[in-house]
Image: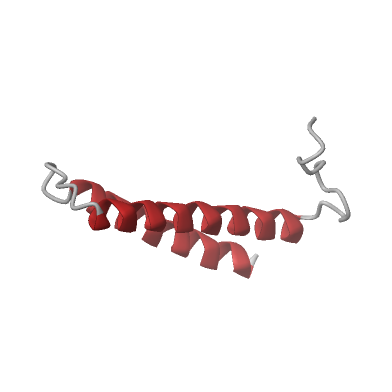
Length: 75
């Protein structure tokens, strides 16, 4: 394991709430990266020839992640 990697459950109990919180944080980070990539593509004037399908898929996935996060916060 590299020094930059966190050990599993280091500094915490490793309980469900901690795991859910960590999952939510990572999911949000990934969603932020995707949003930044989409902005770069738009700024580059790259035309996507799929009729917006990828944008729709991204929005759908983002909405699903939001619903999952809300459900997990209720656990």
